[in-house]
Length: 148
Image (tube, rainbow, N blue to C red; front, top):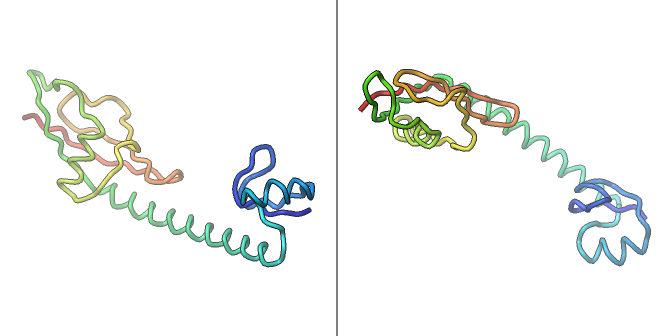
């Protein structure tokens, strides 16, 4: 019996796959658990529409991510931190510090978990932060560390 998987099923396939399974397996397990539906013209058309909608959504998200990356490239964030003699900071600048400063200064909300420093920022001056805006798009913003 041909079925369309509605969810990922271990050792069988992923959501949206069309599989050939035993009739008893389909009727007694997959369909009652709402893991699969019989592969009819209607379900195949619905599956095709869902796939095309998902592709369109991914393209739109990629375009939005590229726009955001272009905007972030022009931003310079100033972070204030306590520093000792010689310009050494007491501690280091964290991604949370950068996210808070970007929101306060530019109104841009950044996810701190998607930021990466090339090297830990422990001195006054400038540094760059890489932000993963999208799995395929990264942006780089400049931060300026100012002593208190």
